[in-house]
Image (cartoon, rainbow, N blue to C red; front, side, top):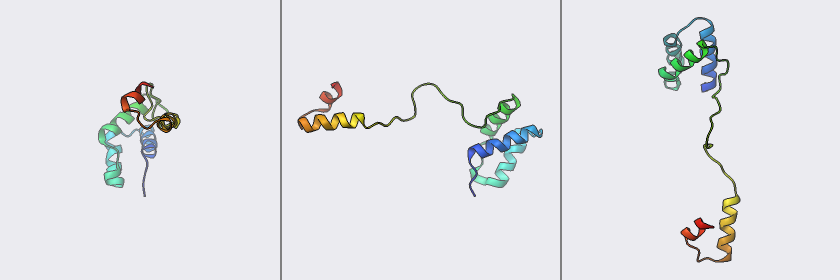
Length: 96
């Protein structure tokens, strides 16, 4: 059975409420999940967050460029240019 990272964080949150430390949490993960357990440093980080009264078990939003943006607009523009004339070079397409 797979246990997700968010589920492991929820366990850490409850364990912190019960007064357990990062070493106890991590040892329980390793005992139950073996290689799927969160690394000790990650457990340590989340224990610290929950001790500071952080309430969310999900990742915080980050500013900046998204991991990936996929639209068909650039593909459509390139396809249209290629349909007009097959002799376009990559440098010419970059300039359009």
